[in-house]
Image 1 (cartoon, rainbow, N blue to C red):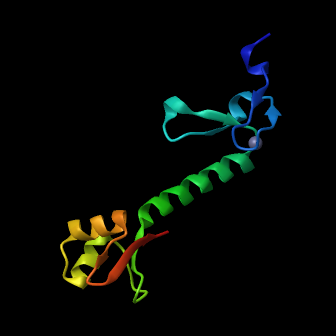
Image 2: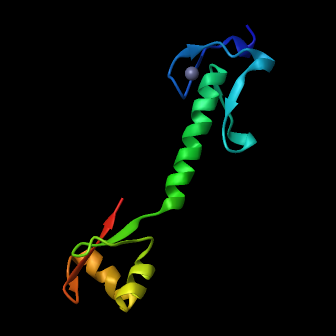
Length: 108
Ligand SMILES: [Zn+2]
């Protein structure tokens, strides 16, 4: 029996399927690590998920001043706003201490 007749498990939907030779659908970020998926739908689904993950990573974490409700893209921006050294704010975030009476926390 040729190897392509071995049933594969689709990493996206978990279904068993028979890879269809030349017309198989693949996922993977580089050609060395391609995995076979059962259908084009699963391939697209995986690609969309990767895109979402990338977007989320890009967005980063937000920083919020609890008392005022103001949010900032980064600790650096928050520090500029408060005219505080960023290292100090990092410490406030991790320890829960306040800066000039303000609580600084990370938000998702
Ligand atoms: Zn699938």
